[in-house]
Image (cartoon, rainbow, N blue to C red; front, side, top):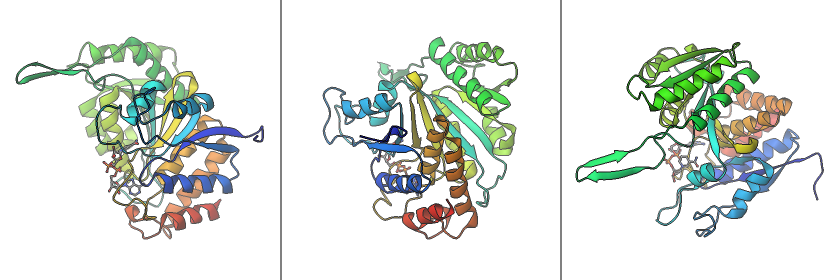
Amino acid sequence: PSDSNLITATLFPGDGIGPEIAESVKQVFKVADVPIEWEEQFVGTEVDPRTQSFLTLENLESVRRNRVGLKGPMATPVGKGHRSLNLTLRKELGLYANVRPCYSLPGYKTKYDDVDLITIRENTEGEYSGLEHQVVRGVVESIKIITRQASLRVAEYAFHYAKTHGRQRVSAIHKANIMQKTDGLFLKCCQEVAEKYPEITYEEVVIDNCCMMLVKNPALFDVLVMPNLYGDIISDLCAGLIGGLGLTPSCNIGEDGIALAEAVHGSAPDIAGKNLANPTALLLSAVTMLRHLDLHEKADRIQDAVLKTIAEGKYRTGDLGGNSTTTDFTKAICDHI
Ligand code: NAD
């Protein structure tokens, strides 16, 4: 039986470097005295017939029950007859928005030092609806689905996020000049929601122009909301602006207020088990989870300690040009806390 003041959160350590960086989060949370009790979940080694996936029904029920969780990277098992782990999670938990904060890390030099933006990606439909087929030999077709329901839901989340996080502007990213019906509907939904938030400036930016503006001057943007495919690409572009995949966190928002935070990167099989992984992305993802729970003081403390450790430059992992191990870097963060 646990302390009633503790919040139970699901933790998937995941594959490859996952368990190493999850261990780092556990240590940091312990030192920072975060009132969270982890319920660890391990993906099955065989397909669960109830889910048609390596994710078991118990895995999914854990997140549904706790409504909050942290997920390490999951390698997609090779073979047929099962659904991708990430797709199963998204579908079964209705994870409709992927939120990625992206800001310049003080002391870690990149071409830009003033990035501070949030990308919000519609996570369930658009070009990733999985509807592709061959029409006749040599001709294939892929169907892009945009619904009013999913567009309103993600737009509503973007404006609510902007309002509750002190953000001034929401930019809807689109290609409605060509995709008039699909992106047109997405924009219409964003406009409808924008009317309910007169205090937030709303603008619409064509995707190609958006890419040019982002690499020229990322400070032009604040909160960006967009359909699935654009979000996939733009959020990686933004990760590149601040130093790469080892640093960027994300949080998936689902139905009934579920929040499942995860690092953007994969299981990094090339460095797995070698104590070389950078835990920053998973730590900052865990910080987004704390903010979702309104544990802002703990979130600030951990975020500050991570940023200070990177800024000092004494302990950095290989991907940031240093030669610290995951454990040394984690210890430095704990010392700061
Ligand atoms: P990857 O992100 O695992 O690795 C790309 C490169 O970045 C590698 O060189 C790796 O060493 C490096 N890297 C990634 N994270 C790092 C970290 N925290 N610290 C230091 N270096 C880091 O991408 P991949 O190699 O294309 O994918 C490997 C596996 O991960 C695949 O099975 C893929 O399906 C899976 N994957 C899962 C997720 C997820 O669970 N959300 C996301 C992407 C890929």
